[in-house]
Image 1 (cartoon, rainbow, N blue to C red):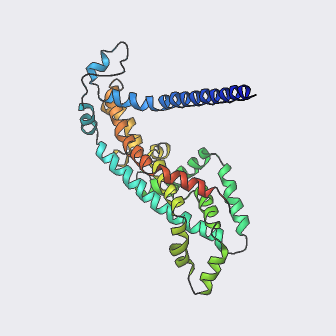
Image 2 (spheres, one colour):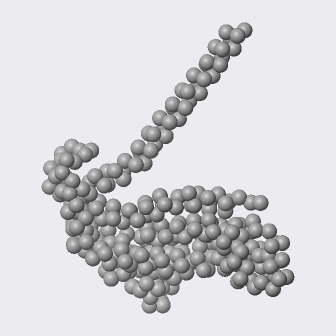
Image 3 (cartoon, rainbow, N blue to C red):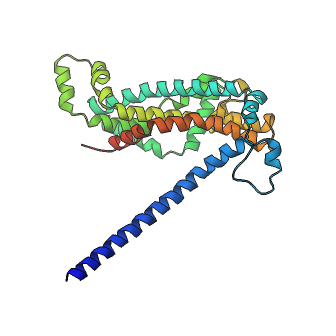
Length: 289
């Protein structure tokens, strides 16, 4: 009996080890698949144009890395201007959107007014409208208002987000109504309760929204491409196309990769610093009670 029991126990341990090895092997394989494009992008960006063009078979390393492509990025086109434009666009859009969604989420979660649920349901239903239709409507509106090739035209259509309103509304709803009513009894105004109580409690979710919105603005392509045709208002995503057409040319892949690295680096650093808060905020926003 003891021998049978030991044999079964050894078999279970062996199966657990095999399962663990397979799990880690799959995770390592998946990590390599995810990381390899970034490695290839950085590797290509530090190769000279001549070295890259002479490779009939792509090499997975280089013995003579160079930074000349990064220098060329800022010489061939006004890339620093594109970065500044993107920073202004991201900060202004995120700040304006944050004000709108916080006030809207507070109204839907804590204030009692006729049609609260109906209006919120209508807002949620708007999420089912294809983005292409919204882009067309926004383009016509901004054009009629003579706001093309302006920062205001870039920013206005992105000043709200139904999804983020819903996320914050669910987060605010987790704070008991008794606290809000007690604060009102003490003479606390709605805005004071919002900024002194709700926002500090729900800070992880708000930080998550800020980071995700900054990433969204940084990667924005379709709308800036439609609404701007002057170089002075190009963002980095549109600047890549400008580089390809009027800067390095289509054949200078190393310089193009250097530009992509410069664009991607701030977002990668931002995500690595705040990835825990992003996960915490999303999980908290989706938990009820």
